Length: 223
Image 1 (cartoon, rainbow, N blue to C red):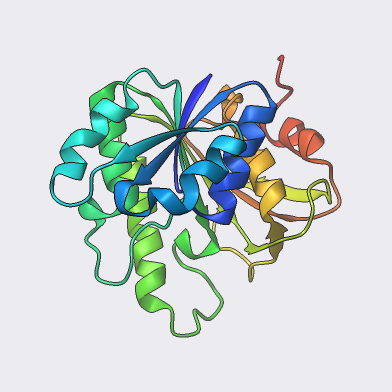
Image 2 (image 1 turned 180 degrees about the vertical axis):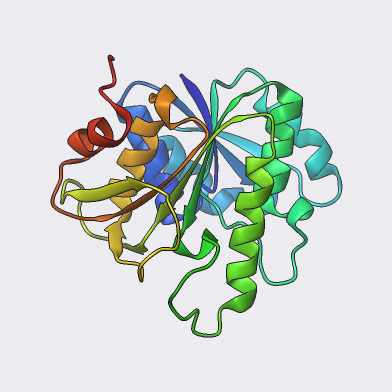
């Protein structure tokens, strides 16, 4: 499976690319030409193909062509800073380009701040919360086979520590933590779960092995 990943320059994005390559998939890292030198060699060493994108106004127009032929898209980058209009956020531009390129499978890594109606304080992160919520809302309107994965606070804990995975059903408790390596493993596994299409799910560290948690929430992978 050829999977284009936006955000491979981040720690999480690099782990997603490595997990895809380890499974035998073909990860493609989209990199800005201006910063490719800092990341290209590292990502190629992880098994990813690096595709350089232009900076500036022409970048958005060139994006659909870079996505054509992919089987899935993964957003592991930020969804936009304070004041970013929903339609111009990285999440929206990436999703719109996927629609234009005819790539249906789209997985967006979000976090607890994407949920509406949280009962816990945002600690002054109102603009950040608004950006996450708007990005999720935009993706849900797209003609894509989307999945949104909300995570707790990201850590550098090693993979395999166990998880809690659930479908989003309403206001969330205060966020826990989850290792980036476990998030990357969940991203790769969710791409193969048709039952996860059109779903928002929530992931934190917990007591259940990832494969079993996926089966509990979405049914067995072969059934």
